[in-house]
Length: 117
Image (cartoon, rainbow, N blue to C red; front, side):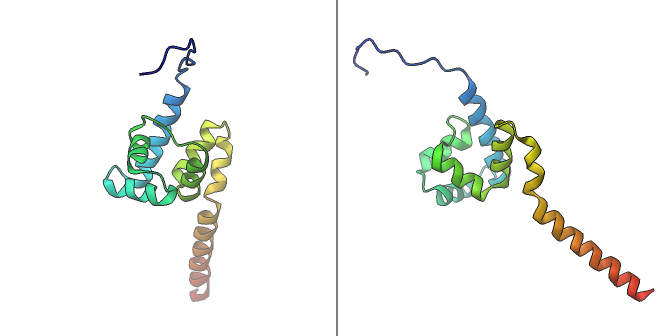
């Protein structure tokens, strides 16, 4: 129980709930809802099991270094962070490496067919 000292906690604006729910959805999308997903996020961040379970449940969201660690390892979390930060136009940049690889592979197939013709 908190001592009565006349201090008032700030009201919850609801922004954290939305943030926590969105990050939870990104984590579940990337890692699944199993205990293995929780363990993976624990390895990525060094956070406790209870903390990570709260992230997956959307009860609380990661902050600071934990958010950076999750974004480093998970494109889904990084993408959600960009959306929440108002930079959704940057999401395309996350996939540029994969797009380049697909284009190189496609060009190799075209070159192979051109050589056979």
